[in-house]
Length: 582
Image (spheres, rainbow, N blue to C red):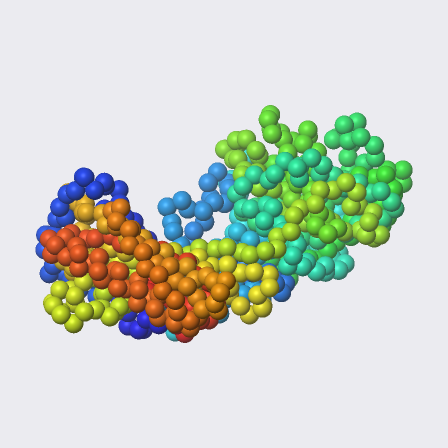
């Protein structure tokens, strides 16, 4: 474990500067670093420190549902043309994944200057953005409300406050219906499968767009429950019913009924709509003009989404920015008119909606992922609506994630240095970009955070004069020799022994050195020592570059048998960036 006073900075802008300096130029295009008076400002490194922060992060999810997330120092989301998108020029401080209970209760080293934290996740069934502020070494998080109700925007886009519709009942100030009849459970396997089939900001696969209306093959009662809302807008979800071929239906003749006046899951307030809360749909009988509990056999149910059609200020439903139907031909685009997906998983039927046009209309255009609004449709009897609906594949199996961590530290803080020539060794600094690879299998216990399976370290080694030049100055005529060291360590079982075999392969400018040794499973320090020895050897062989105020670049790649997060800090092979602290 690294000492708590380890000096580091986790700033992607800094690392981007270093990479721009050392990687973008070829070995034959070498220039000199301008040092100026940077040597006199070497405290610029030492004064930038780190702080341990305990994360109290909890998503309200079913057991077994692990949520991947990214942590930022500012809000990573912005609106572009009415669409909520991630900022393209912003990188996370770190990424993580919860345990099987939806919790992340770990301590992490963050930049000393960090205060506000934003946690972003693209996973279905959780808020896209959480906010927390570091206080006394702890960060607690709450949801950030993303919805917008802007009068000027509505006027620009031709907002209408009146349109004919039927309703199932009333609703409160947050748009939650007062006719909620039950709460339906959603399993972690369902959420995993949806995440895999419908990733954020990727167009939904065509096989789930082929059929989008619900066909009732026997008399049934129908319920709809909200599964996920990932939109900037306060959308209205309505439905209608018909018999026969919808091609023969005049859209002006349908009776639209409001199912959810505000189809947005609200986690911050107890009076808001919660995931799984269901309303019973009513069948409009055209002969009697009445709403009935049972949908007759042979009826089809279509869907209507009114984009940003709920007004929180006056609690009214209106036409909204756009009106999209589950029947594509009624939608306003000239090309791709599809706005819904329909699928099932183990007879769990889901409909997803895209709430912006597929082509630019009134300056707005969507991403086609059809997960701005997702809702579950159930029936009694249960098999009344599952006819001819495509099945999505399992979302089970290992979850693979990566995490980048940047840091600058004195070399003496991360490895034991030779005792000879202390003036040289004690003046060395190391800038590192670490990429962790880990996975989580379905067999992991609920409290597990998964296992580390690999580590890649991109290292820049330089004396204090040069490192300060890289940090605090714009490089003038800047470049250096590019030194590449690749170390791959893989632990595998042999057929003849229970011992582990470690393979180390190092390549420097075409020269290959192979080292092979046998160790028992607990001799983890050998891996670290081997990597450290190789790094020190390369530093010595290139000392003339360092003495000439040039940085050197070393890349270390390691693969190993899965190591649980809980053990990683003790077994990690040479972590030059801080990861998890206890």
